[in-house]
Length: 465
Image (cartoon, rainbow, N blue to C red; front, side, top):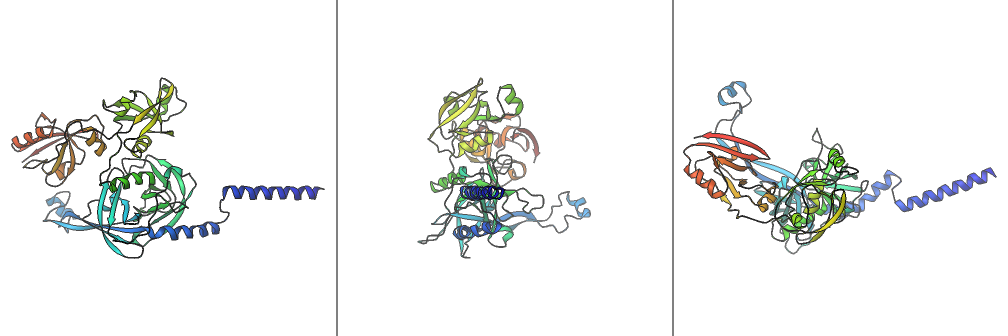
């Protein structure tokens, strides 16, 4: 009787195990996992390409810069001799997302490139044309001329459908050795403290990603592109199993912008936010730290029009929870302009919701984009009047006013200033517009006292000559 009971129990356990296996469909052995990857690789690998970019960089001829004797006479930076230009090469990967030759890669792979070349999986080479470069997401979109041919491409998946533990493949060209496929899982989602780009909302994977993988594909088991591999956490320069990818839903918005003319237009909230800490949550009577605390709102903000106020805590957008300010920024950036979305927020301990129409940032003043010239430290800077639209482009707070450096092209400005610097004063005169700045520079007499706001810090510069 005892043997019969044991036998029956064994049958029951076997049946339960079979049912559980059927429900979860989790591979039982390493061999099963390896076999399952081959069909996915065959479908996806041909759509992953190598991207090469050349850029010219300035340097000075100096064979002895490290010699203490020469450093004593020529300065601590060791630079002397005639300036010269050198060719600098960068290597990365890219993904074909349209059969007519539209390719996505990382902006840092092609940044500053004067000559961009794409090599397909079949070894054919093409010159690439830059459709769009978006520094804020670190994405770039390229186009190659394939005439009437249809290339293999990857469809963009829904990165919101990913779960921690999902199997993924990373495909790219690490260290320039040639196309390489590595496997792993989704280790984490919504990583917001990576510090790579303005939109901190990354997929983390343990699939091996190394230098040269940047711009390559992260694909799911359905063969869909779910992320663009972007960075790794490493002290050695090689993979230690912590890699980061830009979600496909963000990639989709950038590709759509490239197809519509090459300029990214994102919704604008016009609000300053702060993450909810444990102390803030306790003071507001919240069960746990979550959401984004509203610190200030621009008068023209769509949130202002929807009734939100300083001190409200935004908890969700379109039903998707918001854990912090970075996640809210991502959610908004991947929402179409013109759409109406539901924003849930906490006020006075009560959770409520309102409808918000997503709009582009307004240009409340004409930007008057101007290349500064003359014998002054700002020569070579392209300056513009600040407005919510300009602030949004540069990732600056919406309520700033004055004159900002849109970019630095050449001249003395390369030495002293950076993109995003806000010029506050020149020779004691407050700079409230590009016209004021140009006038002050024209009247200068060779000595300059300049104050700028750089990332919230006030820097003062004195230059003569």
